[in-house]
Each structure stands twice: as C-alpha cells, then as structure tokens.
Length: 413
Image 1 (cartoon, rainbow, N blue to C red):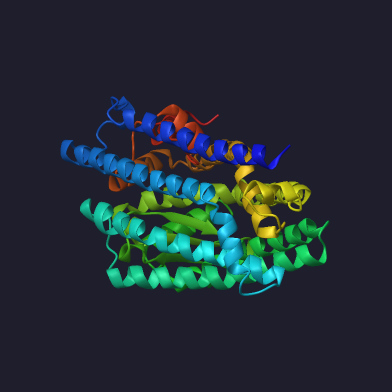
Image 2 (image 1 turned 60 degrees about the vertical axis):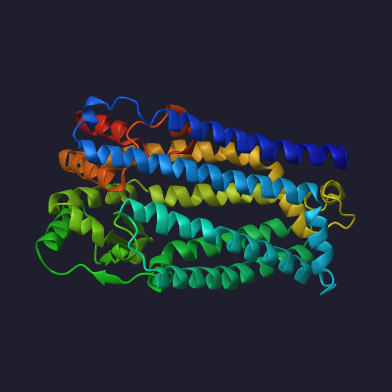
C-alpha cells in the first residue's frame, strides 16, 4: 500500500458516493408522477397534488445544486493540497498537538457552518415559504443559528478535547476510554435532551386538562404505561409541519406533541399517534437503538485505533507529519462504504420497528385512526406518495405511507 494508492482510494470513494446518491435521487425524481395506489387516493385534491409535485421537484433541484457544490468544493480542496495548507496554517499558532487538532477541526466547523448558511436560508425562506411551510421570522433564524453554533462549539469542543487527551495519554487504548465516554454522554442526552436542550429553542408546555388529556391518560392507563408528563412544543413558530416524539427512559421519559399536530388532527387521531409512540417504548425500541448505536461506535473506534497512527494516511494528503486530525479525516472517508452498509442495516431495522409500533396501535383498536392521521400528515407535508423502491430501501427510516396502510389494514394475528 502506498500514499498514492490511498489518495486514489479517497478520490474514488468520494466520486462513487456522490454518483451513487445522485442516481438514487434521480431515480426517485423520475417516479414522482407514478400512478397513486388505490389505498392513497383522496389524500390530495387536484390542486394540492400539483403543489406537492412542485414542492418535491424544487427540493430535488435544490438538493442537486447543494450536493454538487459540496462535492466540487471537496475535490478541489483535496487536489489543491488544502488539508496540508490548513495544517501548515494552524501550526503557526501552536506546537501543542492537542491545540493543533482543535484549531484544525474548529476551522472546518466554522467554514462548513458559513457555507451552509445561504443554503439553509434559501431552503427556509424561499422553498419552504413558497409552499406555505415556513413560519420562522428571520430574527429567529439568526437566533437559532447562533445558539446551534455556540452549543456545538462548546459541547463539541469539550468532547473533542477529551478525546484528544485520551489519544495523547493512551495512544493504543484511547478508543476504549473514548467509547466509554461517548456511551455515557449518549445516555445523558437520551435522558435529559428534552429537559436541557429543547427548551433552548422551543417552549414546552404541559398539555392542559381537558378531553384530549383525559383520552391520552386513559389509553396510557389501559396499556399500563405511566405517563406523568405530556408536553406541547411550539413547533408552529418555525413550520406548519407536525410531529411527535418520545424521549428518555424510566422516570425521565416524556411524550412531546407539536402544537401543529394538535391543531391538525382529531383527538382520536392524536391518541393513535400516542399509541404508536408508546408501542416503541413497550417494544424496547429506544433501548435497542441505543445499545446498537453504542456497539457500532465501539467497532468504528477500534478500527480507527488500528489506522490512526499510520503515516501513509497523512502522506496520502501530502503531509509528512502524522496527526490525529488528518488520520481521522482520511479514515472516515475510507470508511464511507462500510458506513453506507451499516446505515442500510439500521434503516431496515428502523422500518421493522415502525411496523411493530404500528401493530401495537392496531392491537388496541387504533388502526383506522392511525391511517387517517398518516394521510393527514402526508398531505400537510406534501410527502412523496410514490418513492422509488431502491431509494426507500437505502434511505427511508420509516416504511412508506402505502406500506404502513397496507400493514394497518391487515387483521391482527
């Protein structure tokens, strides 16, 4: 193995991944106008259907421009010795390897954030606004940007500093300490994300006493699910799209419903959505996902430890000096094909979990209400009713609405 071969491998993987994703997007685009299955007829009126087609097409074109821009920029950066030039630049400020890596990754984070801002702005204030989804004021956009930037810089900086310290102190076994730390941090995020992070961006309000809360609590009691905390989140200040999510374990678990969901669905449909979310909890999906993700991270870190000090990785990008940041960047690029495969496995598992959660709601008699809710949510978000099978297989974490409705209409065994 030579540095030249590694460089060819890096370039080939980047090009192949871009072409692969481009073909998937194009295949999906070509199926936008496929006949709508009988089970999905009536979701859209003629005017809304045309709007949904225009919305999907605009997003496809926008995604094409954005991904091509990023692809070309990365290839130019690699072929113009950008990684070496940046390494030389940050080393002017310090000789400490830990600070060199922090400055290196900090530069990438700041630069990528600045590059992404125009795309994010266009997505929200042109495409989303054109179709009536965006409700975010420009001031809120700026506030969100500043908060996200600060949080990532602070939390990410602390995490990265600790990982770099592990690497300096324990070059051979740093991956074990890093793995333990990431597992602990991930557990904290699962337990307290809704309590600590979400309130920085949104207001969480307990669901008021009334018919809806009584129905939700009655269902929870029926399935032996302790549900002390049901919150409404003010998602409508950013978008008209609706959602619901479940977070935490044990006493920290919370059910969060978007205010748009409460406005757009009937009480019975909301209970059906809750039944689906409770199904995830009852089937231990949150725990399974957590364990699988932690195991996956451990495997990646172990493989990284075998290559991180390989001088060939640095030499492939024109550097003579081996460093953590260059080794990590080259490794993650070379690891891309494996990450695509693991992502595919996780998507398959996620779709299986979604079926199980739907079946839980169906078991308690909420099949029709969940179907009705899914149809409304699809219409309100202009979702694609006829995605390409390969695109679904590779990228969808949920079954398509067509697949879910077919499953929900089957009798409970």
